[in-house]
Image 1 (spheres, rainbow over the protein chains, first blue to last red):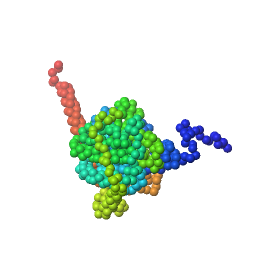
Image 2 (cartoon, chains in turn purple, brown; image 1 turned 90 degrees about the vertical axis):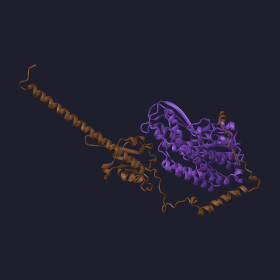
Image 3 (tube, rainbow over the protein chains, first blue to last red; image 1 turned 135 degrees about the vertical axis):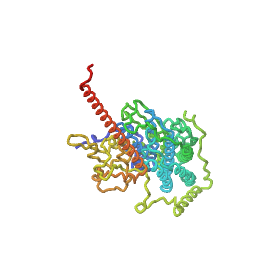
Amino acid sequence: MIPDSAISFPPSPNANPALDDDQLLHVSLGPQHPSTHGVFRMNVVLDGETVVSLKPVFGYLHRNHEKIAEGSTYLSSMPFTDRLDYICPLTNNWAYAHAVEKLAGIEVPERAEYIRVITAELTRLINHTAFAGFFMGDMGAWGSALMYAFRERELILDLFEDLTGARMMSNFMRFGGCRNDLPDGWADRAKKYLATFPAFLDELEKFLIGNEILLARTQDIGALPAATLVNGGITGPMLRAAGVAYDLRKARPYGIYDRFKFRIPIGEKGDCYDRFMIRFLEMRESLAILNQALDQLPAGEYIHPKAKIRGFKAPAGEAYAAIEGPKGELGFHLISDGTFTPYRYRIRPPSFINLTLLEDMCLGLDLADVVLILGSVDIVLGEVDR
Amino acid sequence: MAATESTTPAATPPPVSEWSLPGMGLIKGLVVTGANMAQSFYRKDRMTTVQYPEERVAISPNFRNFPFLAYDGEDPATGLRCTACSICEKECPPQCIYIVMDRDENGKALKRPKVFDIDVSVCMNCGICAEVCPFDSIYMDGEYEIATGDRFGSLVFHKERLARSTDYHAKLRPAQAAEVAARRKADAEKKAAAAAAKEAKAKAEKEAKEKAAREAAAAAAAGDAPGTPPP
């Protein structure tokens, strides 16, 4: 018989003796959709209702994406990037294509750049409307808000289906452009749809923003100083909600973003309410970009005529390129040894890095606020676990 | 925070003043839900649910599902355009295509697939196989009602199941099929023209050769002919 001592594990180096108090309650929150954002678990230690310690546990959705990419051709990794942040596949496609284009020095025709901006900003609309719905779900208002948001999302997905052939797994960007041109009448339909979007935003704002329960639940919850967020590498709406106007579209313009007139919304306090509001304001700015892009859309090639689809080979070298995804800075770091496959393939996922400060935001708050704060970070586990 | 340097005037959230009358925000929200509920009875754009098996929405002409193999003519066994070059097999991201080249008894490649299997339980509908195919052979299908109870047997599509006529393709994606047909026709004409030119050239060469031979023979005959003055 095996003695008990032989099967007991050594104490974890991270173990905190202060947490061994009998009065504290250890709760394993998850891994089945603690707030419907995916398979994510948190080991929470509670003193009554108050959070004393919080350790995120993830990896349930790990798919070995980076290692698989090192063994497959450059093009073969493109459909896998759809599955990173499955709410917004087109920005993932763009970030990867952008990195490979930087690595191989490929030029992108003007029309393709416009198509990319249009799809990326539509993706931002999808992400932020869905965020509003899920965030209300985290608060307990499961249903109406999410259904209204998904109704609009569905109409944008119809546009995507006509353009890319799939509602979500678009696999649309290519190194040097896009896979296909806009179908006939697509731009007009997009314009027609976007003309109805401000009315939806007004309705959603009227529906949610003045709500006393929302204000009471979100204001002054989960705020961190801007310096902490910057030091933690936080990007995207979370950082901007704290008053730091850092947006890659302005700070390091990629593509053709320097041609459009738009503003960067910033918040004041960086609490959950500001994070919620900042997304509404960003949707308005995205609409401005979309209207400009659709008006200016030039004729021309949708892919560089010399772009290689079969047997693409990148020259030896290293490149990092990032774009402002709906959730933050989404970057791809590629190292090539001059063969058909990348030597190293690394993703900088915004929601993974935004999640690193979760414990700092939650300490001292109630358990119910933890779910809310996790929702306000806007994570997608496909991207966190990769 | 160097990032703040390159920014424009920022938009900040509007002040929320609904606190003055407690409950007003809630009531406003409820008005929105009520309006939505009422509109769902008479506004066409709010009636978003389609009663699926009875009603169907037309699928987008760009919609893609699983791949199929195109064949020319009537017989899928002989008309397959696929040459078993294995480019799609190599580029397939989840590696769900399996191809074996057909060979004759001497081991010579017959440029047609003996086995062409696609495991659709692995296929992720990305369409890269259709994109990289240089022989206009593989396209994405739009068929979606393909659920089956046989998990292992019927989820591997063999080439007989994958074969679809070019008419099917033309019906499914008219624009793409028309473009491909026009290109193939032009290529075939070019090829035929090139072959004809080659044949004509070969014939001309042959004639020239024959003529030269005749002339040489004639010259030789003339040289041998009696009465020629010696050099």
